[in-house]
Length: 281
Image (cartoon, rainbow, N blue to C red):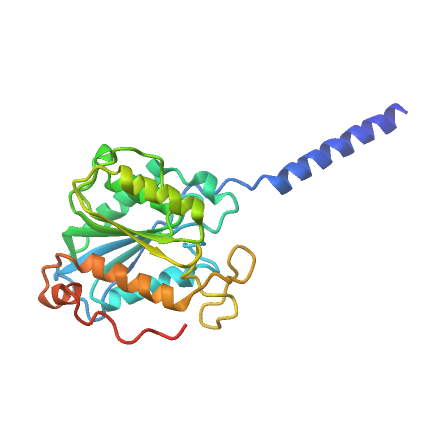
């Protein structure tokens, strides 16, 4: 009986360990792949004339894996428009970690953004005084932190866009960096939090809030797209809306180009032709 009891105890302990391993995701990598860069075609050393854009993804496998094509496509399109683009990963968002949201610490992400800005300044191809940020979903928390005065924001940060963002409960938030918020109206909880954040923000930089009649993940193509096949949170992404995705990209590009010293880009920001006809979804 004693031997049986011991075996039962060992079996029970093994079961508990196995259950814990099944329900609690392993910790994310301490140091994810940090920074990938995308340059305009024909860019040469010594030409410090391309505004810098840093992309900060949400929990969608930015470093490597099935979610990467979304951010790569976005980065390449911005580079085609004459921008020097960096794509970073942050702890928890790589490689699509199941507990990603739990690691979406604003201060940590802001530190990663600062580190990326410092790294991209070392290139002779970027305008060191014009750095823009684009963040998705949970990464918006880090973007908002990075450009806030309380963080001691980099003075080179300019127009910033956050797409279907998670918004913090900060009252009287201030920034010298203009902020554009592209909200997915179907996510009413996030939308309400972002409206309140916008109402409570206390300048001095302008804050633009645009709401799309679409759901969280509206720019993520579904898995049956052969060009960018992947699964969104384990299922086909029914939230994808090609028209809204294209509108969000154009709004982001126009916002980045506000104040761009290059004549053609400034004309585009003022309402000229920004892009060729939208790509088919």
